[in-house]
Amino acid sequence: MRESVAPERRENRITRKNLVSSLLIGIMLGVIGGTPIGWFAHRIFAQQRAAQVLLCRQQNFGLPEADLQARCGEVY
Image (cartoon, rainbow, N blue to C red; front, side, top):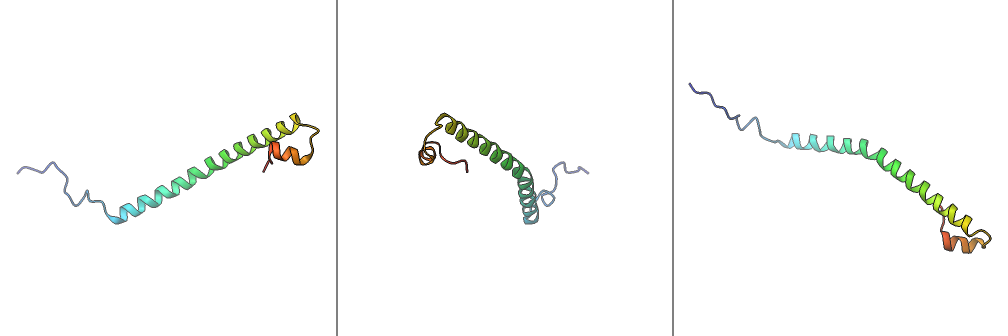
């Protein structure tokens, strides 16, 4: 009367239902976690770019607008 130590194979089987639910949970967590990170990264980049353009415009004060845009670019 020896009991089996190893679990049965049917209990450890990965089914398609488990894979689909795991995939959906991963997508939802990625969207919930990734959206704020992307928003903050975009905001930081936009602020840094605006500061670079404004600094360039200050350093080249007195040039015509066409030359400023060619040299410094646009903020957006």
